[in-house]
Image (cartoon, rainbow over all chains, first blue to last red):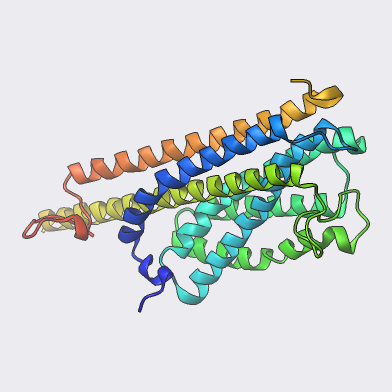
Length: 254
Length: 62
């Protein structure tokens, strides 16, 4: 009996399956995000302390969660490449990097735009903010390392996988930074012992937006993986064509 | 819709999210089309993957 990951190890099978799934995930993401935006702007009340700026939370928190999930995908894929040599693991890790970087950037920018009216500053060298900035640099490192080793994709895959596994240590640091250090950033208010500390009228739109963003992330990740598989096919066919031309030249010269 | 004294921060946040996601989606679609076009060009020149080759077809590659 094959596991799901074993069945998806065949890129052709993955392409077929993802081609069928992608429109459904994309449509569901659009629908959920539209519902979330409606709830955020027309149903959710202003916060008793923060007023309307709480609306920034509906995009900031999902972006922050996905910035961590993106790196978790890279770490799990890196493990899959280094330990199991799964054919799609490197494809998944490479595809997740720019998307994760984009969500981390959004978490930083929206956090900054939320911080100015609430804290009086766009940026403070606080443990949470600084650790998320390091996560952003890790994503940039992933992308830059692959780009620098463009001529040798196999080596690039292995080295970025090592970076992916080493860098995963930042995730618990981000998660617990608000507990371990005194920070300006508020402590965890959704995923915490004792249940969420947010009123359902604000929590529900937040969760709907989070589901919508997560579906969007998976849709984009699937699309990026499909693109990467096509890129690898193009590369291998181009190399095969060059080899065939070289063989033909040798035969002609003989 | 009155978003209070900090409306500019709220709109700016949503605008930057919309812009970045739109750019990301546009890049993914453009990249997919580019790879598909390259693959079709190669196949038009007779360079095919093993699985895409016809039986007894000569000159294909992996």
